Length: 151
Ligand code: HEM
Image (cartoon, rainbow, N blue to C red; front, side, top):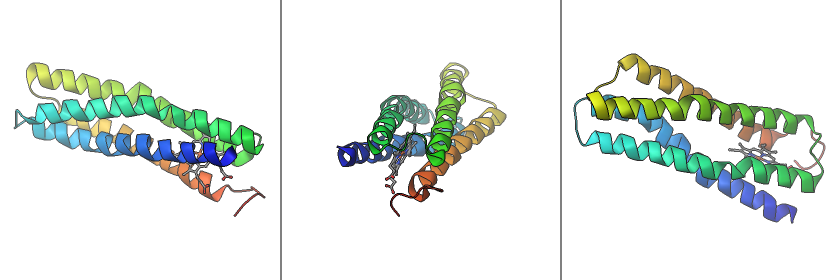
């Protein structure tokens, strides 16, 4: 059962967090290009849709992670507590900053046809913070500092 849950946990992390990372990283440059090309607004809209939908699917990552941890009996481990906190921070940055700002920029782009360069730089910064947080969690999941079980 543990192996099954862990497999699902890692699978969803790849399938859901991967697309969010790529689409969110492509979003700010796509907004800048959309200044000059009408067709690019469609691309920006699609990237936002990918981020929104796969973020929703990504909720299964911590849910399956907690189930795996429960089955393994490691819920009290320090590395796991740190991972849970960092995952919550990553989800918070995504939900409070990245997705809403993407939506705002998309509206501006569709309405007035242009956005301030500064807004895309700020969004790129929040996206970078999100990526850094979940990448750190992945390292923690593999290294598991302080753990006496496994490699
Ligand atoms: C609430 C958040 C999370 C919890 C409770 C959790 C829990 C766990 C647990 C218990 C394991 C098994 C570790 C072992 O084999 O001893 C694991 C493995 C793993 N997790 Fe998570 N996880 C969480 C979030 C994440 C996130 C956000 C990612 C990446 C996006 C991730 C990626 C992985 C990967 C790649 C492994 C396989 C590591 C390995 O077996 O070497 N996890 N997780």
